[in-house]
Image 1 (cartoon, rainbow, N blue to C red):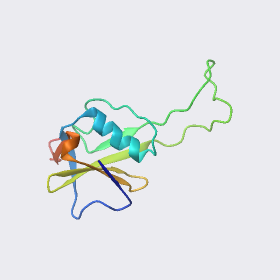
Image 2 (cartoon, helix red, strand yellow):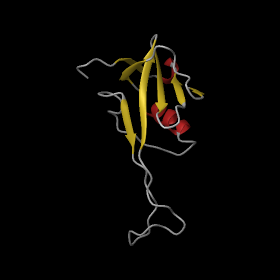
Image 3 (tube, rainbow, N blue to C red):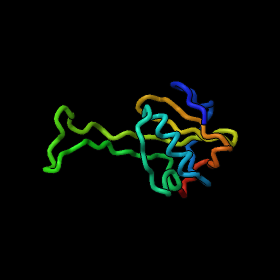
Amino acid sequence: MDTTQANALPDPAQPAVLVEADRVSLEAALQALLYGRKVSVNKDAFTTANTLIIERTVAKNDRGQLMEGREPMQASIVFSLWTNGGRCWVKRNDTDATVLLAPEDKVSCKVMSMNN
């Protein structure tokens, strides 16, 4: 996996869906884009659409109140999957940061068709 900076998608990149995905590799890519914050995704992530929305959670106490010093929930984080030349990238849409999913990550994708 290769973490890169803003606007690193190749030109032209096309919206993609996953054909094969090792969930651990995909979660590692998302974790890199979340500055190390752990994330779990469904096994169907990116298989029918090129977007994935991660809901932010806020720590609450046993009475359901925000933990002291915690801020109210912020907006969800949206990721998108792109391809060019058989390679796959995950992009964090709000920062434009990308991660290249390498073949050794056991991940492959294809251009998203209108039927997906």
